[in-house]
Image 1 (tube, helix red, strand yellow):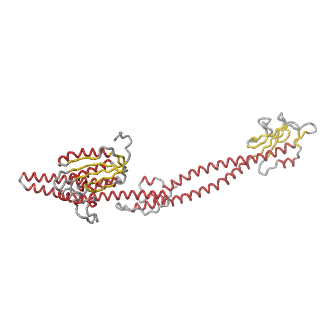
Image 2 (cartoon, rainbow, N blue to C red):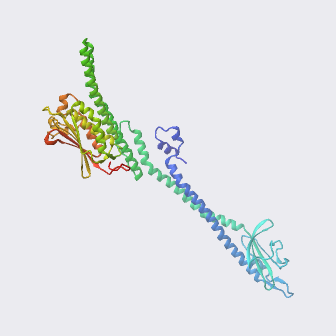
Image 3 (tube, rainbow, N blue to C red):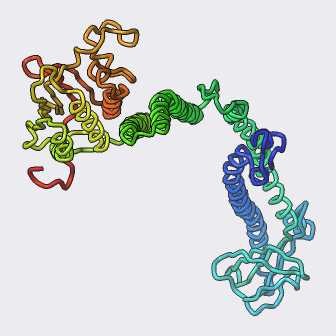
Length: 500
């Protein structure tokens, strides 16, 4: 049975119709335990009844056999050669006396004629199969228990002694009652104790439900619930972990929305100003210049949105990213071929180093591709030498022990051209650590009026997701910038072609 107040408490403050029809967890657990115990009690009672009946019947049969043996000893041959019972009436009543049952007997010759006793007492067959046997005989429609003896001395005869079975049934019922009643009381007591114990053990779950019902949508703090068992403790930890992930996702969404609102305001305002200026002019050449400016501003805004989305997606993937073997040499070769048209259009000498040897790393192909894309984009945009030399960008792969380095190097002004350290990156005079943070631009980016300072921040975030790291440094001969993504080496993926 379900305790209704407790059942309503378990459902919470807003139960629906389905929940109202479902049993409480405490009732279900108690039923799951008590049902097998009840079956065990029933089976044990039946076994006790069968065993008690067997031994009680054995005791009564033994007493009945003793009476029959005493009567058989009193059957003798008379002077005329016939059989007779030598006991007097008083002695016969003493032998057959029973306080609770009626006892009768009969002695018959082999031909079935009666020697002494009750003529109504007869066997269906004349002789027992053994020296004695027990049988159930009806006497005047009343069931009786009988023992049959076959004797050959002094002459062959058959003795039947039978008694009623009233006391046997009464004794068996008492035995069954005394054996099962205490067990039933213990079973009821166990059920009450078990129900109370289950309720106490489920109290942390009720507290957890009450705490969750009190929470607002924005309250994702850890639950202050005391767990009395390991299962409840694991449940609370899982809920806390889920809330932490939800909190991170909400924080990322709020940050993304704030970043979009803040950073798109400037390019959108510029597009609006260019459009207004073009509409106010009647010169087609002015229209063309303003349209070119609008297209350039739109491209910058589109790139900014793509970068913001990349960071938001990286933050969202931080909870369940599965790292797999990635063929880094193939991925880098594919990215280089994709960047060749842009490099040729910009007059950049794009080269490669170390891409011929197979290199397998543990990571995510999409994240590595995005990181390399951002590194190449930064190098092609800002890696131009200030002295007018031809710009060069090189992508290389180098294996070092259990790590593989993917690096992009240019011959531009380098990272040291950034401004001095700020509050966001104290103690970094060269500004390299500051440039790995969001919204931080180097000198070339500010001079060109391009970018939003998100490229290296995206690469840093991608590296953290893959348990890798991003290193900054200078290129060969101390010129330019060299950005290195250090990944963990791994064995080739199963089924990869040889030499890949």
